[in-house]
Length: 243
Image: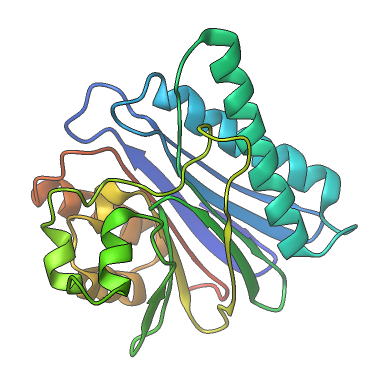
């Protein structure tokens, strides 16, 4: 677990019931900012594990060259397009269709947080009273947005894993950008192996009552106990240290 710039964090990944872990994550400090990211290689596509690693590596490289010189939202857009191009190049060279999600957050010392999303890996901002999370780029989310499906029905929809955006499949990708303040909150990032199986209320309770290390372990254990059939990756971070 790391503690720098006032941010305490932990990150863990588990293959779950699968032989190969196709998730990847990154947490690091770059020129006075924290970078946190979760990527989930798409099932049904070749070498999802490679695609997710390429994505987080491209994010790290872009952040290292650009943070401090350009604004975080601009850097996120640049990083996601670089990651997409890198996965596309890998596919061309190897005649494959590897693809991955990516959710990435940039946090400054004041608690200001910029988030980019492609696919259905999520970033949550959680307090004891509220839960906010990024919007999935998925077929089922579009049905929910259109009022054709309730959030509760979406959990059990047979096409809940069909994405409308992913890195590696098209020349450019549409990045959803959000800006939040995490002061006094807990930031949780996850692949869908967690949030497709663990209720939001449970994620909230564990995030606000446990330190980041314990929260990661508990959330992964609960997802596995809930018969998650996917890889499970979790990052938990908060701006102030625990007593």
